Length: 209
Image (cartoon, rainbow, N blue to C red; front, side):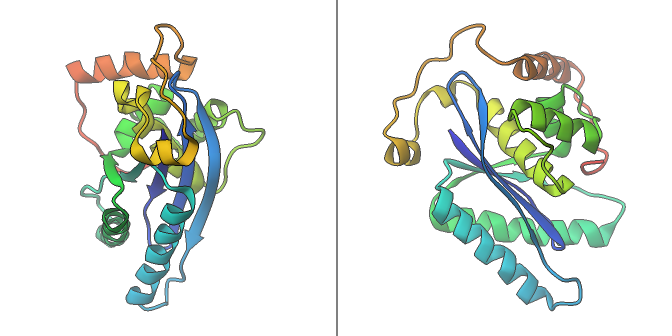
């Protein structure tokens, strides 16, 4: 499964593409942060994001586009910018016929670290470990985008074992069944955290922390 994770924002918009095998091993494909200047008119800033999303969808042909779910924050101007960028991203996915998965920051943190309240440093450290990178992805928006992509693939469950049409066209690969015991350590941590979260679901209290 190939997932494009996008951490939306007007000033900085993180893009991260990962390939996740049937045994849930994740591999980095590409990562980048797209920035816009604050004093630039809003339509032009949104256009920059829209064109970047279109380009990445055409270049990397993901099976799924994962986006942070927008929810209320104390900083209204920040949440408005995130919401505007998210709308552009989701619309682009629809134009390209790519499925969209929305995840809250708490869900993503729990997926990659086992702790729904983990800070940015913990998320970045686990993304670096999961993707077997020699150095942490920077800035934080890049790590957040990759975390979104990883979490989305892991949360998709058994569907990962079957290649999508986009995947088949891209690689010609045949999906392999997920064998018991093949999940990496970080995925096992998430499975435990997910089971715990079902019993005591917390309310999201902010963004990436």
